[in-house]
Amino acid sequence: MKILIATEKPFAPEAVRQMKELVNQAGHELTLLEKYNDKSELINAINNTDAVIIRSDKITGEVLANSRQLKVIVRAGAGYDNVDLSAATDKNIVVMNTPGQNSNAVAELVLGMMVLMARNQYNGTAGTELKGKTIGIHAYGNVGKNVARIAKGFDMNVIAHDPFVSSEIVARDNVKDIEEAVDLYKQAQYVSLHIPANEHTIKSINYDLLKNMPQNAVLINTARKEVIDEEGLMQLMTERPDFKYISDIAPDKKDEFEQKFGNRVFFTPKKMGAQTAEANINAGVAAVNQIINFFEKGDVTFKVN
Ligand code: 3PG
Image (spheres, rainbow, N blue to C red):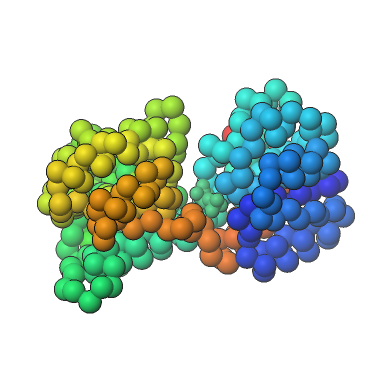
């Protein structure tokens, strides 16, 4: 079978080496399309492959339109909002993700960016410490759990809200479960977002929710930019000079945020959460194994469509 790695933002070289070795050992053929500039390159490569491994690469109906032999798409990562699931299903293509494989990397970035902001982006002035402060984790999945573990190492008070995770599971980690989202925002100086982007969550982090955060609030977004209501956040930050925003994905209104709020915002130039060699190896190798098991045994564990 032909397996394509199509990554506009490439995996670390060691991840690619290990993925290639596994593909070859299983008797399949690997093609690499990295840092492509044009959608047509992706379309051409997809039209010629049985399986594709992607990251945040956009797999739209148009990209899949002429694919005849494609049977499986694996999103090496957690969020699959970049894949048109119904277009894939219509063409009998299985879509999978690799949950949990890059979550520690994202969680480490959350705490790293929190320290950056607490220390005024290392500009030489006196900042603050994380110790003793409260962090609210909005959605307690794989990344949220890792954020809790690391935040406890900083001696932070950790609370979480997730309507899909039981209080018992949250309590097992010695984290306080908060039933209503608004109460999480009321209690936490730091809120870290780990919700997916879908029809229920897009623009759900809005003025009415964020206004509840206490003084010196910091919102950390390593989820998706789409979950933020940018207008509402901008209004709140204008009204509240104490409010800070850190995001691993620059907002659509990046320039305006930076002009208006200067040192109170920080945006990575490209999504960096999963950009570690370890996360790339974990997610990339898992993706290859899932494809091999799909072809050899029809295994569809982690199918999302
Ligand atoms: C994910 O959903 O797994 C993360 O957002 C990482 O995305 P990336 O692979 O594009 O860096």
